[in-house]
Image (cartoon, rainbow, N blue to C red):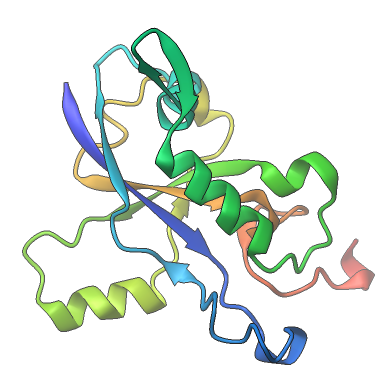
Length: 162
């Protein structure tokens, strides 16, 4: 059993593509630690989604506060690759090294310049425990990932290569 800290990552929003009233509202990058969960050794990646999204309160399943925050971020994040419908509310798992023991300036550098490492779907069938040892779990809205090669980038895929 171990505690896993959760963050969210979005690409930086382009000021030239935003409404002037909203510029600066969502700057992108890696968030601070938003929440933590306890993960059992037997927890799978599929079970992890349920743990993140729902909680049992007195016999009633409710959305977690993290799930509501994630939904808000996913709806408002830039969508440089033109995802539609259900993909707008999907997220992928990623990991990033922890900020434990680092100076405040190193932590600020990490939040603005570090891109997390995506956990690819073929890996998601395994157990979570060892994969998340010594790292923070990062939730990445699907809209932030280029569909052709699963890279975290806002750059469009060159037409000559598609």
